[in-house]
Length: 319
Image (cartoon, helix red, strand yellow):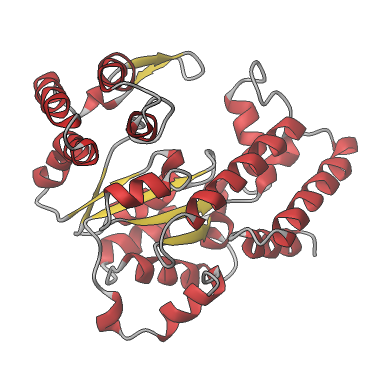
């Protein structure tokens, strides 16, 4: 039996009775390529009375040296905890010229206690130790606001869905994506053209590789646990339908605060649609467009789960 496509999931959400739909998970992972709109979607859902989002990307459960590597034996539990305390907790990011990490909302005392509990448990129950560490560090955010669910928005959560889906069987995943030209231009600009990707063409290579990695991750969990959300369709076109299907997949009834945020803040002018044209000289835009068209065609031919929506956006913009 083949896995359901995004269109299959959309049709099922449209047909489902409300009683089948409105049962939000206690944990929702929102991921994407980077520069794709994950934070926008997390902010929308954060307005609901059920969810509290982690303020920034926690990363220790997805990045190199994190949960996937420590569980596969590529990283020792001691080295993992060292990285947690000296990198993911607080580190300086030159591109942003600022410190980032979980230090903003995880007190040092909580970090130390959770780390010690992880090391005591890991040898006998490695997966349970990872699960406990995640909740020890992040669940207090939910309790502080008397909510019932957590949103975590590290970019690689869908790419690492096979690991995270096993650790957190109660979790659902949203894959947020956008026109690859805009994502590529934003990523190259974020790097200030000093590191890879340095150009829009390199950015498109980076973006395609990330999309394929995410697609492989989505294929590694049970059908129906991952839902693709197009940022372009969330801010343009039939945006209310896109919002409604996303909300129903997550299991949320509509609430005024969430709907009001979506209507007032999530608009095309805030999403920087077609931003790539401002980064590419006009004489080179046709060449970039052709490269991107070929990428979308390859993704479609290979059955990548978000290819149909990418093609719809491309065709809408070229009319």
